[in-house]
Length: 182
Image (cartoon, rainbow, N blue to C red; front, side, top):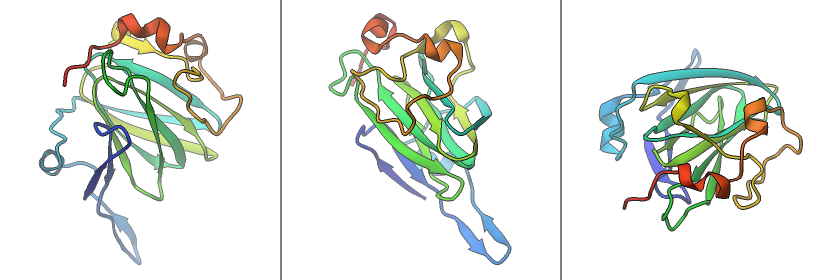
């Protein structure tokens, strides 16, 4: 397994070892001990699975105290993490990584970061581990197209939920964001 920091050093790209032969492939998608050895000591308590069609954009979402480990099990997505920790030297900066069924990569997104993705294949299925149980009253939604963040999404008019379409820019949500603690 290879773990490398992204441009936001707390957000980690995980490349599991994939064993391939004439039958197909095999990989471990998660083993706590190995992840701890690479600095991901998060205790995950909930797994989620979503399916979406091309052009669907989900996010940007954050929940106080929730970290995620995201992977694409079918298709491909552009997966994005945004630092929303007030006082962080990287507040408002983002990183975007392609996750696909072909590259097997995962993205570890620690607490204090918003997360979103857009489907770039016909269909995509995403699985992600969460370090906290979903609590809708604790969720923060940030506008996917906030110019302050400046994400270069590969779609001009994504398919959005009503909630994501009505999300406010980061500046308006700042008082709801977690405080940076080095």
